[in-house]
Image (cartoon, rainbow, N blue to C red; front, top):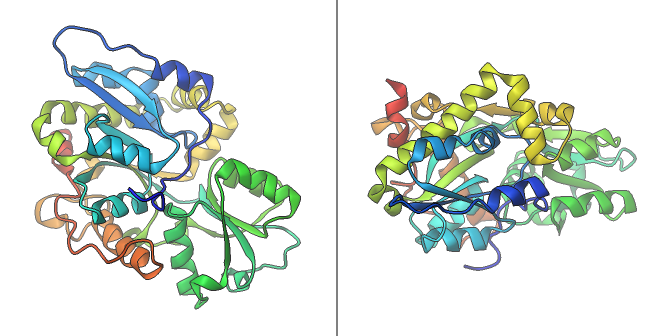
Amino acid sequence: MKALYWLKAGLIPLLTWATLTQTPAVAGGKPDVVIGYENNGADPYMVSMGEKLFEKNMNANIQYKFFSSGPAAMSALASNSLNFMCGIGIPPLVAAISQGLPMAIIYNQERYTNAAGIVVKPKSGIQSVSDLKGRKIAIVAGSQASFELATFLKEARVPYDSVIQINMAPPQMRASWLSGDIDAAIVWDPVFGALRESGGHVIKTDADLPRSASSYNVCIVNSEWAKDHKDVAVGFVKALDEGVKMTKDEPTKAIKIMAKLAGVTVPLAKSELSGYEVFSGKDQISGDVMGSGASIHSSATYQTLVNTSKVLHEIGRIPSTVESFDGSLIPQYSEPLSH
């Protein structure tokens, strides 16, 4: 896969994450399942990991693997050496589907609201998206941020190529911000929050995007593999749903787990989580998320795939728009949770 298609760059895995990834497979006739992840800060799926809910629900030998780049994760999914991948954005998935890979969203984790957006230097003179013309903005090229920036610029009638985009990982943005090498950044938490707290002025957040062309964190799977391992796939979704339920029912406990695994303070974890609209297992089959049956095509997630494809083609990230996303959403594994 071309290196052009990068996922949101993860942070360096912390010791707590490394400990999770070293969980050994146990013999006993169960299937071996590898769950990939990115460290995007506080997230309910960390509760599922920390509380061993995947082990509880999937009847499989679970291993966790950290990924900091999209091509490696997508290649691993295509080869079935990785079974599930969580915490990634829509554009890398669309890029993979455009190349014929049988990738599908099995669970839409959350919609970004105030946990991501465009933040500008306080003395840059930038007051709105229109002022970005000719200015330097840090971005993870090919990530969800490329779609967001293109959408915001088009809305403001600013040519996409008139903004000087500097490709860098989120941790690098902090240093470039301090050195004055960039005027702005389009990024997500925890770096988004850090730049904001350092005096940055927020001119757009993902809450400004419509649900049908929004920014989501999703869990994906090779859809062919999921068909052959239905019970494991259903157990995976149930584990995620239980993590969300604990987050809502026992927020103090859940946030402590997230903070520990993400390597951040409890207040920061709480702040990061507040920037998401989190979805339960039951939510998956609603029209506001993935829908079910005939309503899948009109669902917010499906329409976001369509709109993302159009934008990525317009800005040259994929050679042509994807003709159909049939089979790219598989909410059926969540249907048992709706009863």
